[in-house]
Image (cartoon, rainbow, N blue to C red; front, side, top):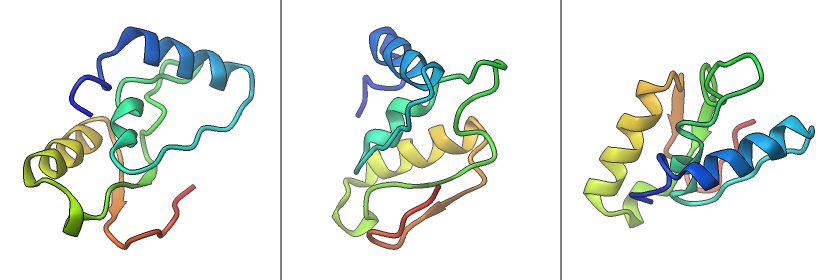
Length: 88
């Protein structure tokens, strides 16, 4: 999780995948991989979205805090803390 937000290869692959019109799905701590992904218009992909991440009961406190902070800084409007509750 720690290196995903700034991994240039991951960002480029995700942006290319989105640019081709493909859906994106991430699990557990993987929403951190979307933190710096941008849409064609230059906006962050996660801006104004609700994102479900790792269940906090089974997450390291530091990882949980970092992921929450990263998502909030990029414009996520809310995170679900209920296990297996989806957000689109």
